[in-house]
Length: 545
Image (cartoon, rainbow, N blue to C red; front, side, top):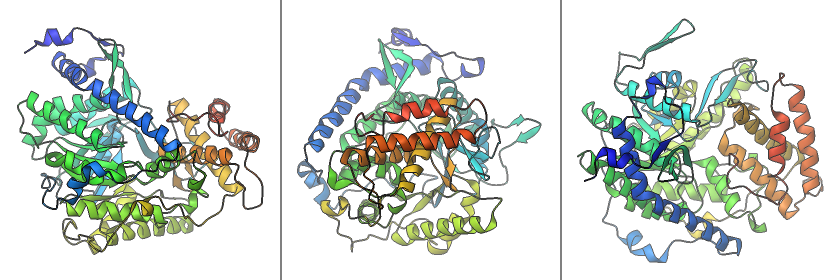
């Protein structure tokens, strides 16, 4: 077996390592990351190339379907995913947020069952600050871009939180973990397979962002988590096939073997947030079997993926985003099939995020927003979901109330949904009632430019019309704009959507946003980048690239 010094050969770290971060980037941990990279990076790159090939097929009109080669897995009624792990039996309300120290303390102090600590999106809500957000009088969405400093500090914060050493003072205020009850179970979301960590290079290649996030967290905390009655648990994002789940499963096995931990201790919940993954949900659970803790409806990314994958196909043009609700045919089919699939295999079917945020200065508007949250959570629990997501502690109480009333048991895996039959045509049914309006175009521009402007400043704040807009909704917005221009659709007033029309509205919206913004904003720069993505011509895989 290679020594640590041998494994460190060929490793270069280009990010600054502060004194507090040295306990994370130890020689042993770095050697472990190098092992993960050398073992799995070639396969990761092959799988990403498969995505490119699959996209080319879709562009030629080949629609996805359930895989004939894995039919035996779907037809075999005997296999099951893993039994729920300690701390994951009841997941009725999960809070999500980034890994900055303040958010870690606040999330773990929330009245929820689990906390999904996010290395992928790095987003969180905080009280409105005049110099950071100027389009809402409620809450702002602070966006910590996944910089080297934020990512490594996040690892430090989780390390300290697990050991109950995360208390700190900020601006004279103390932030302390509660001691009057058990804390929520911690689940970490590493970055997706498509992202790389360019500050950490092995043999001349950057490591996968997902392996970097997973590896550091697992190496330092797996045994400590088990000792404290839980385990190393993860949310796995952005997968497009069961082969990508198989790769994660192999990573889990090698990681557990490396620290002499029993296989099956790790658990992974997969976010079904791509249109291709929905056709392989049973296979995804099967690949992760002993490590599976269910699937989650990542609704906004799912809509983005649907538009993105079929952007060349005029039959997949959707109306204004506000019309694409969870009850339209393709979204309703997605939810029903996910719940049926999970419960058939004995794992959790988790619901998604409500986009509403509290409106402190307008009681009537806040009442409407909270009513929408209640309706959304009621829909989820009645459909058979075992839990749901909130991004703001103020919404936790609403979700808890709804799920406690309608789900008196720890979960609803006994609801098999055998009444549900979903076909490929159901999943691809784009019969969505609604119109394309100039107002919808302007809203998409405001969301996209607002998100990019925040990203460029490292502080994103995009609560627009009291809805929380994040990377996923920004992706939906720019993809719709691209799609509408590409296919030359007409608005409800008869105006044809063209490259020139989108760019003219971009100019108008940007000027309006800039006129209300403090000095030093980056709206013009954001608009310059955004303008390349709404013409129906160039299309980047992801906005942030």
